Length: 281
Length: 292
Image 1 (spheres, each protein chain N blue to C red):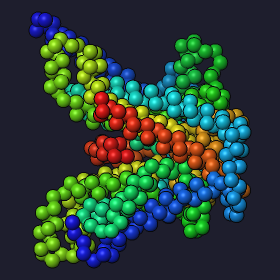
Image 2: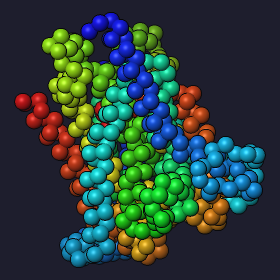
Image 3: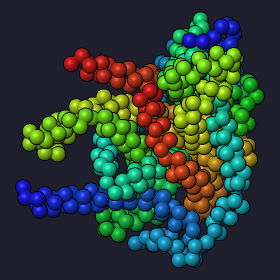
Image 4: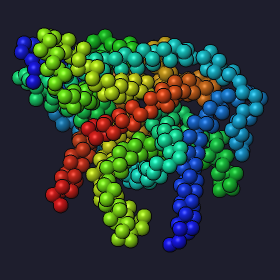
């Protein structure tokens, strides 16, 4: 093959690759773009025309105001934020504590405790949701945000990821702290925990996103509309109140934009998390 | 290993262990017990032996949910094993702007299924973009009832599940592809193997365990499908609930006022053993791989 031919083939290959990338991009991002466009179109502009007009003639926030008038969408956003932040914190703190004990402490029953956490990972939530509801009701957690958080406040996966993070840490640092006379808790909190920041970031982000996106459990456990999280709330908006696609589109944008922003800011942790979670989960 | 005071380790594991016991292992035991009773969500219930299961065997709605869920698994698994792999091959090379494409392809994964479901409800509605496009291409004269016909609703939900999952499994495959030794590709290239040939003889054997893993994850996830059907069906599972999945039927039968917790628990056990079966299958397949 002459060098010129090889170069031509390479350029052709690149071109085909970029064309395919663009096609996939349209398929995977196009629906989001169409939803965003719909949410910004005023009543005077048709959203049913074909070929579709992606660019709103006169972008307006009217639909967002309308969504907020119909259901307390900012309240839902706040509820989702509380649930997601709380879930991220509890998964990190309690997951790290348990992971540290499993990785660094020798005690009777350690294997059994470890097996218990692994056991929770093979029980799908959908299988036990009726019983979890009955338990939550007897604990007075129904229709509360705490009730939304608690069942996934510390998942087996969080414990496992933290345990692996600590196992990968060299013992020397903690041994030095031990010689300095630091207690168990101090060794954990001051020395070990800061060293597994990367793992904690993955646990925090995944717990946050999971809690923000979760639908089935909040749908079951919440009954008063004011307590809804965003996922339940926008389904309520579209299912009960309005057939106006512009307003529904505005509601979905409110639910998804904060999360997409978080994702683009912290991409590398997401990709790392998928690698670790999929292999071990 | 550290730890002298015997109580200390237990204090460390206590919060996580309490959550695991109260909200996972305990309810699991409870589910296994309730499955053999006629308990309702109001409480009570007496032991009824296998009655729930014999009732399930004759429950036409349960069989329909089982068939729907089975179809879900059968379509989603091959789609999830192959399509994200092709996508991963497309974004594997470190070419200009590839990181940008990878991140955008992952966006549907980050979004909630409710958001994704509502977006597609709009696209697939009778006056939505998909019907408008099909009409514009003169492929149909009347809009297709994607969301109001039970069979089409189920197929639409399957499509949405695949659309949303592509990016996730793409990332799983990217990690596997990065671990394929370069030397194997180079050796095959020296032997004159083209790109397609190298894909079949080098890449596929090297990532086969990952393909099995992806297939299992997809099977377990499809067996648990709920939100797609619920949102696309606008809070129902199509006319007469004919597009219901197992989880949809468990929720309908077991929760709410007078929900039959015992009967729903029996269904839950069936679902559990199905997902467990998928998980055991993967360990067996991968073990056989190692012994070859």
